[in-house]
Each structure stands twice: as structure tokens, then as C-alpha cells.
Image 1 (tube, rainbow, N blue to C red):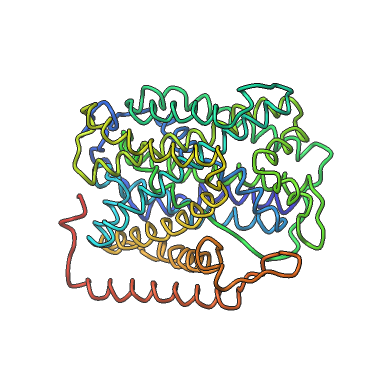
Image 2: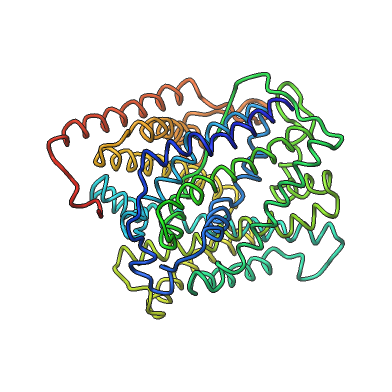
Length: 487
């Protein structure tokens, strides 16, 4: 338990110490924000700081700090370190700069931000990339909660239509359409605080059981394996960048929400490590539960630790968490397309013109999964890789921003280099990417990952990207770029 408590303390301290370093490096000031300057009553609306924080937390949380943490717990307590340092030095930095760069550029979508700092080609790549990722995010976070609702009802003894994934998927998608279409303060601004409180209470209740209950959180004894995801956060952050009254709210809203997500993930990872049997250094007990699906695993943790109260909190927290990322994912996709095609979103016809195709594609993917025509696991895996890749691109864009602003660009260049290695390695090892070409299966069907090839190539790709960045800033020292920075 000592390892867990140390990591918890580091996360909290990281918000106040390293988060302040990040904020001071950016240098927020008293300039007029997009919410005040543009205010259109739809997407540019001034919201109070506590609502900004709650909405941002739910925007970025999804299933990552819950299901992702449980997946990480398969490798034992090492997951505590990756959550802690990944949150402080990569995730928090990524989220803060993606939100504040958008705020400095009139609330522009992340694809447009990438174009400003990385060039026109990257802008077009990111436009397509962002829309595809956001639709996958929305689909993943529609199918996941629908499956969990079904699991909860089945375990409660209910029968009939309430136990079909398709029924609940349609309900979720209908809500997504409404939330994507209406102004941000009509639905999102009103219900998110309720769901946010439920999510926080659920994490606190689970933490209480782990600290004072019959379970023992194992100590960190080895350093092996990891995964870090926060890419799609950059597509969500512009939503709040359009609703801030002051730049000085950024530390609490963007960096603070990421640290809060890290704490929630740490608690769920600890539960995964404490509740299940570990054999040969691997969490075999958790692996067996996860084999039945993420909904079954989440339900099992809640029922074991908190009983029926845990199930009730799961209904509000775990289900609301992905739903409140999914609706803003589709909303962000609408805004990326709106920025791309210069469509004024104050006009309801223009919003409808974008909502229908965006939600239509998500519905096809989601219903296809519910009917067994599309494998949800494959969608999740593609989401995982695109998530990492987007984080990499945004961190490089932030590094260029800091260079142009004559600030310490190593603050973002270091995690950008790391994420470049992670993204390239995942692309090589993932079976949905090149893994089928370089990996092989053992006699018992277990996949043997060819890390001897993937790791060196991943490191080489990261070194190449860092070299390109350093060469570019050296070349541009004599070519000021301030006219495009939205100052």
C-alpha cells in the first residue's frame, strides 16, 4: 500500500508544483478570451470555473481511467508509476497546452492549431485524423456504457428489452444527437456537474474500501510494461477553451482535470491489483474477469468492494463517464468540420448539416457491433493507437508554439519524443496494424510480441522526429512566424 500512497501524494503534489511550472511557462494573462470576445450563445459561452472543471473532467475521462487502468493492472503495481508520471509529465502538459493554444487562437479546433504550428499539410492530415478519431471515440463510448447497463440489469434479474445492448445503444445515440446539436449550456452545462459528483464519489468510495477494507494493495517490486493514452483529450479541450472567462483558469481546468483523472485511474488500478490473484507476476485473476468483457470486470469490482451501493454508483459514475466523453466527442467532430468548411454554427441548419452525417457514421459502427457485424475490440484497438498518435502530434505542435513564443520548448518536446516512440512501437506491435506481420503465436495460442524489432525501431522513429524538430527550429530562428499565432 505504501507504493500506492506515495504515487497518490505525487499526483496531488504534481498539480501544485509541476502544474505551476507548466502554467508559468505558458504565461497566462488578462487578455479577452474567445468566450467573451465571440460569445455566440451556442459553443462560445462563458461558464463558471467549477463547471469548466467538471465538464473537462468528464470530457476526457471516458473509460480510460477505469477500464484502461484495469488493463494496466494486468502487469501489477508497475501501473502505479506509469499513471503517476504519465499524468504529471505528459498527460497534464498535453491537456494544458492543447486547451490554452486553442484559447489563444479563438477557440480553434486542434486540427487548425496543428496547421498553425506544423504547417498546412499537417492541418489537412489532422482534419481527417481528428474526425475519424472523434467518431471512434463516440462509438466506443456509446457501445461501452450500453454493454454495462445490460450487464447491470442482467445481474439484477431483469429481462426483456432492457437487457438488449441495441436498445440502450439507440437511447445513448439519441442523447448524443441532442447534446451535439444544442448549445453547450443547455444539456452539457446542466447535467455534467451531477455526473461529475457521482464519478468522484465512486472513486472516493472505492478508495475508502481499499484503504480500510479487507483488501491489501500490493507493493511495487518490478519495473516492466506500460501504456499511456491522452490523445483525444486535445480534441475535447477546445470545447472549454471557448467557455473560459480568464486564461488563468487553465491550470485548474485543464491540468487539474487531468490530475483528477490520474487519481481516479490510480484508484481503479489499485483495485485491480488488490482484488485478484497474481501468478508469475501477472494478474491472472483479473485477466479471467476481463476475458468476459470490460462491463463484466467493472461490475465485478463494484460488487466485490461496495456491494449494491457500488452497483448504484457504477450506474451513475461508470456509465456517465464514457457517455459524457462520447457526446462531446461527436460535438468536437462537428466543430472540427465547422472550422474546416467555415460553417457558422450559430445557425441551426448548419449544425444539423454536420450532426446528421457524424452521428450517422457513429450509429452504423455502434449498431454493427451490437448486431455482431463489427468487432468492438478492433474499434477499441484502433482508438488506442490513434489516441497515442494524436497526443504525439499535439505535443510537437505545442513545442513549436513554445519555440515561437521564446519559451522552454523542452517542456513539451521531451514527452513528444516519448510519445513518438510509444506510437511507433504500438503501430509495429498492434495486430490491427503491423503486428500480424512481425508477431507470432505460441503453441497455446498466446501472441509473442516481437519487441526485439519494435523497440529499436520505435526509439529510432522518436530520435528522427526529435531531429526534425531541432533542425526546423534552427532553420526558423531567422524566420519569425508571429503573424499566424493569433496574438
